[in-house]
Image 1 (cartoon, rainbow, N blue to C red):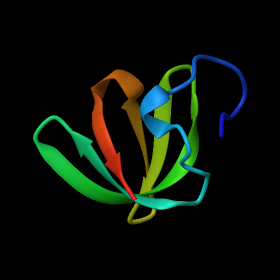
Image 2 (image 1 turned 90 degrees about the horizontal axis):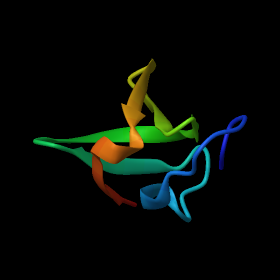
Image 3 (image 1 turned 180 degrees about the vertical axis):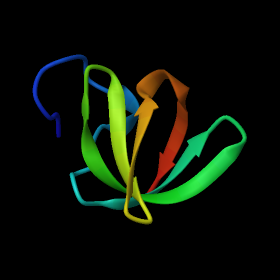
Image 4 (image 1 turned 45 degrees about the vertical axis):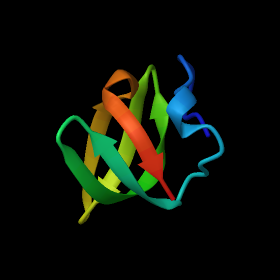
Length: 63
């Protein structure tokens, strides 16, 4: 779900806020809780730290 306004993030279609997912970006895969997106940037919570990832860098999401 979007937070505020901005572009959507097609790779996150169907993933709800609060869902725990595996995120694949470049050479890394990590477990995170999806927090939403804003202006083409996806927001993930990883070990209590908010991680901002441009949607264009996300290769895949595994639920």
